[in-house]
Image 1: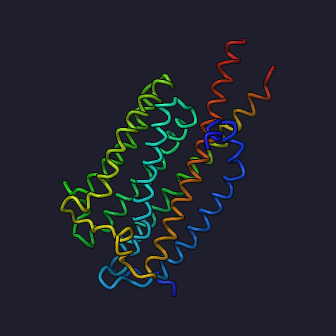
Image 2: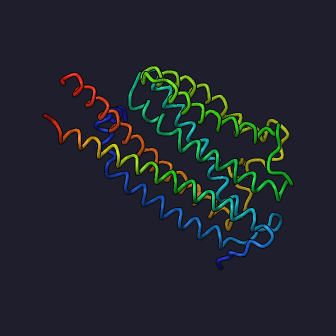
Length: 240
Length: 50
């Protein structure tokens, strides 16, 4: 595990993995889309239930992406490890994309079901918006500091602080009054939906997770390459 | 069977799916383009080694 923390070894190890992840993501997405549109209408929510198949995966995998960013930030800060920093940096953009998608698809689901696109002050909605702001803030902070080492440290601190928000997002539906429905997948008494709804949801969640891994690992490898280019340029400039 | 008639909810279901497809495609395109650009840059630098 820690052997992989060497950027060269990581690059070698993940080289054959990258195409497998991309193909896996496309296949899972295709199956997920098919299952989502052969599932029956919900007896209460009608066809709007199909928004769930893109909303829940974006929201739940988005939370997982922040966890990846936060844990990578911890290793970057404590062990000053360059690969951990590259991993945190590479997670920010897909995390922001997933969280933005969760908010947009959620509001498109909210309008016909709750009568409103957005409810200010709602615990789940606000904590999810704060999650998006952490992702955007992380990228903005990195972009605003020229010194890469300083930018990495500052961003890692922000990344770690944002971890506090994760349990708030997850448990907001239990801790406060909210329009948002409570957890329906991870429950003590098992999922509260039928298999015809559960199958497309689980396949789409797997698709979003594998898609993230494909994007993430590709982006980490690119970051390793970019740093090599920067180092090589600096060396050439010194030699010249 | 395949059900593509979203009835009165079409104005919510299709934009939700459309924007999801668009953002995922844009994310993949950006990441792959960036990977290719930096790989090419490294290759060019290494080829120009004195």
